[in-house]
Length: 149
Image 1 (tube, rainbow, N blue to C red):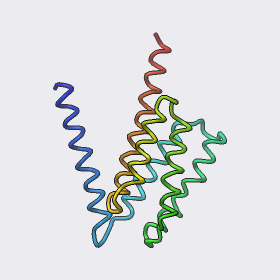
Image 2: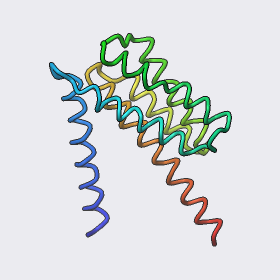
Image 3: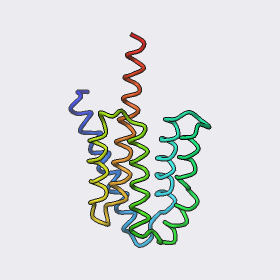
C-alpha cells in the first residue's frame, strides 16, 4: 500500500474517531467512562515518557487526578476555568517533555484547543494532545535509532 493511501486511511480513521467523541459529548446521554478512559490514556502516555518515581512522574500522577476528573465530568461541573487549567496543564507538561523544536507546533495545538467551539473542545483537546505526544514518541524513537548507528 502506498504511503499516500496509508495516510488517507489514517486521517479518515482519526476524523471518524474524533467525530464520534463530539457526538458522544453532545448527546443526551454521554458515555463519561469513555471520555475518562481517553483522559487516563493521556496521563499514562505522559507518565511513560518520564522515569518512574521521579519528581516529574509523581507530579504528573498527582496533577492528572482521574477521580476528580471523572466526578467533574459525570456531574457536569466543568467550568471554563477548570477546563482552561486542565488544557494548559496538559500542554505545559508536553512542552516540558518535548524537544524545543516542537514548542511552536505545540503552542499552535494549544491555541487550537482553547479557541475551539464549545461542542468540539473535548475532541480537539484529545486529538491535539495525542498528536503532540506522538511527536515526542516519534522523536525519541528517532533519537535512539540514531544512537545505534
